[in-house]
Image 1: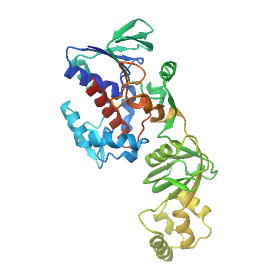
Image 2 (image 1 turned 180 degrees about the vertical axis):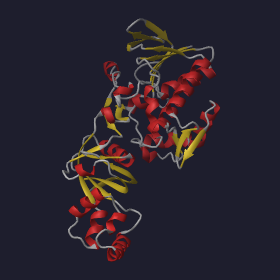
Image 3 (image 1 turned 90 degrees about the vertical axis):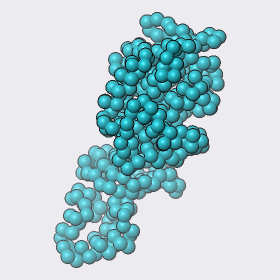
Image 4 (image 1 turned 45 degrees about the horizontal axis):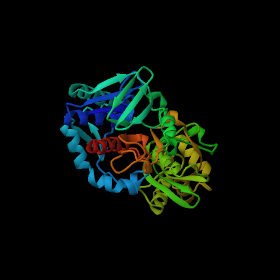
Length: 385
């Protein structure tokens, strides 16, 4: 059996390893248009490579109905076992799971060496420009020569972070083959705001609760650290909010509501503020907020008494202008419609063609959910092959 895989991201790399371990007699060739294998993997988890999440909830994905049975079958214990079968030991920080090295470059290098050990062949700096299904074979065309395979797996990723090789260039090929795409959009990015008073806050961090409203409908609610920018707001919780927002296509009238002290209810915060103001009226807020954020809260407060200040602290409202572009995205929202593949991620249009990983219209929140999907989709295709 001869299998061609286009894309050396995590899904393609995992699949190539699985196939050669089980079918050592088979020829597995991975095509990579970049000069370096799996470039995007080097940046995952802020360089620490967040492989999995112990809390694999379907609600962390844009396709909860599709993911529910998938995650029931491929739960965390199963996936950890798969990694251990490859000699990959893991460590965790809460629900976040990392390779023991906690190094994305080391993990990428390990997978590359493992793939080479089991006999995977790599064609680096080789761009696949098209393919043709001919009976029971698939002819894969590159800029240099053509190759013939029994099965062909498309694992090119989405369009996010083009500087790491995920530029969406293969979408054009798939459109030519008749595949329907959910319009790709940047996922897990900062948000730009319409508010003009946030520029002085650039660089300020604070733990908070963030809610997002589409009109009157609440579409997001999560705690995490926010990071103000010159033109907007960032942080993991904001990345997740951005994906939740833009899974609604291109929504308007989005409002963020930020609670700077979610661990205290309103009455408790008023009580604490009143007490501390009585002790040190001129500087009591220094123990609550850094100075730029103090000024921001007071400017938005209807008064300086504890009741008004607490109201502002727990109810900072921002109008969302847009998300950052693909250069800042960690994942692609959208991609090839799930209607184009069967339960094995085999194309319904073309015999012997599989589509896996971020290329498909599946995206998750920060926290290992997207690398989890890369691993699961590779396992699904592997079992079918």
